[in-house]
Image (tube, rainbow, N blue to C red; front, side):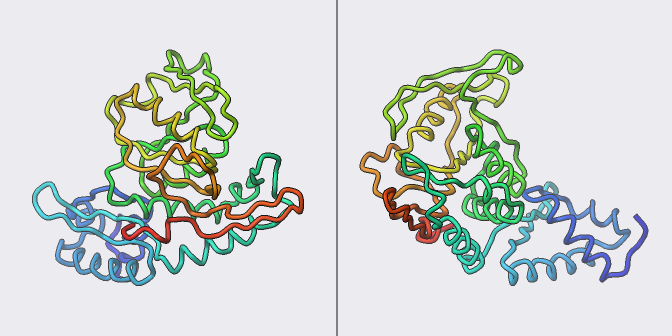
Length: 276
C-alpha cells in the first residue's frame, strides 16, 4: 500500500479493525502497511480507540511485548442496545405473531440484516471477555443469529442437526426431552465439527423451558466442551420448570393471551446483568 496521509490512514486503520475483530495484530504489520513509524501508528490507534469508545462501538486493547499488538473488542453501549431491543419488542408484541403453543413468529425479524447485526453485537458484547472458540446453535432459526454473533467474535459456527446427514460423516447423537412438550427428541453433531475441549458459546432463538439448550449442553459433553455462555434472543416468562438457569436473553415474552391474541414482549435479562 502506498504511503497515506494521516486522515486517510486513520480511516483505513478503523476499517481494518472493524473487519478483524478479536484478532491480535502487531504494530509492525501496520507500520509496514502504511510505511509509517510505530510511534505514529500508536497515536492513530489512540485516536481511534477514543472514537470507538465514545460511539459505543467497542475498544482497542494494546498488549505489550514481542508477541503483543492491538486487538479490537466489539461491544455496544447499553443505551444503544436498549434503543434497538425496544424497537424489536414493539414489533414482536403484535398479537398476529402468536403461534399455537405460545410461540412467536419471528422469521421476518431474524431475516432483517440490520436487526441481525444489532443482535450479533449485543451477544458479542455480553461475551466479549470470554475466550470463545466456537458458537453452537441448533437448526434452523438460530443459524442466522449464531452467524451474526460469530461475525463480531471472529469464530466459526457449528450447527447441531435434528436429523443426522450422510454428508457429515460419523456423528454423535443423543436423545433429549423437550422442556415444553415433554417429548423425546434427537439431535446430532458431526465428530469432525469441533475440536475436543473447545470453549463454546450457545446461541438460540427462542427458549421456553430450555429443553433444546439443555440437550445441546448434554451433547457437547460428548466433545468435552466448556460452556462459556448461553445467549437467547427471546425467552418465555412464567415457565415453571426452567431446565437452564445461567443464560442471557435479549427479550422476554412476558404475557400471552392466545384467546385474545394479545402478547407483551419486554427487555430480557441482558439489561439487568451487573457485568456484561
